[in-house]
Length: 202
Image 1: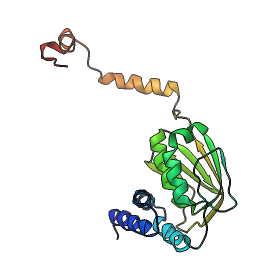
Image 2: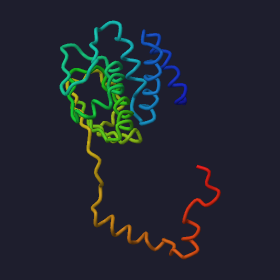
Image 3: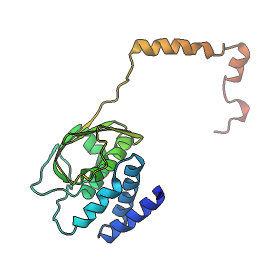
Image 4: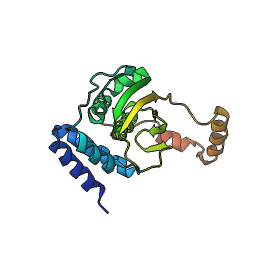
């Protein structure tokens, strides 16, 4: 089995060979590694994309808005790099739409990493495929195929508000149980925790 580090290095070099900068190549290498770690077909999709990259003409998304529409298909790499770079301003939009994105699975790792940077979960719908990104720690999806996805006509992306999955009452009940582990504060403990003392050198 090929290691994740070898996948990252080889993809980085291949991306540079396709004419991208070393900086972008490094990002694509990390992303493909991430896709494979999450069980998504990164190598299949990047390999196929590179086969047609110089044959077809792709558009770039430079500045994101709520609606991003192109008659031609967007390059998933440049779209992803700019999405990641504009993560703070994009998260304020809360919801965006992208029409005509080539090889959308290559865009996915940029979204996952943005979820961590923005500190919010992100819900992404690629045509009929749904993905939920959790701070770059996990991806929940109804997409179980290992197939190549060459084109997506419509992508909807939404930044989700951070909310608890439990009620205040459930939290209070659990917190009350945890109180049994609290150490009763004695006069001696109060003296020890009263300050930094003479050794404080701040």
